[in-house]
Image (tube, rainbow, N blue to C red; front, side):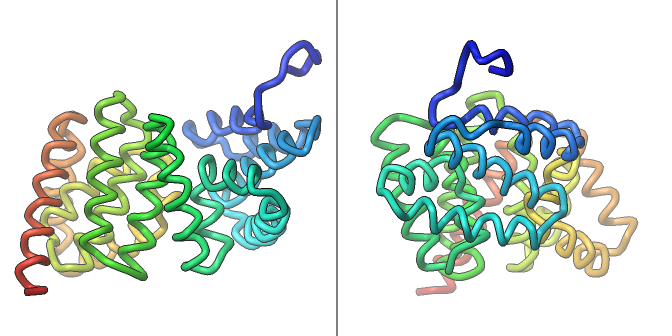
Length: 253
């Protein structure tokens, strides 16, 4: 691509820099995004999507917010670009738009992902919908979306994205009082360099869990989770989701 002999469709070359995020080098991801030329309108949007995500995960929250707001305005100009944005960047939508607008766009993106059989998009969108529903909507729906994302990432062997996704689960379980299971899952989730950046709530949850459980008990439970295999953790997470959904359903009746 740098030689001019090849391009990625829809400006997805900007997302190549995300590889650096997974190894804890956000400054290199930022450099990559900022040096990508805008070859077309689609490419510009794709690269700007990547830049917003990178700014956010690198800790430049206000810069990310400004860039994301401008990006939403540009994408809404055409249905095609808004569709692209809702599919490839659920994080941008969650971060830069009012909750009802973000939820609507993400639901549209989820339909597109399901219709096209794109389980990668389905997983990313489901994970962010979980976050929105947990904080502003229906906790039962949040658990349903989480189950989808965890299942897909496990089936794909994508243990890297399991960590940030499980971070959502830790925050929700802590919020509803399932502290021991939250601590166990936290031990596995925080191994990922992206866990705390992608889900800042996990830091607050862990602080609360240490206070409720005590440091020694928390460390013991977290160590148990840290030493689980990905398959074992996926099974454990699904079991905890099922138990929590059963309890919430019983309370709501």
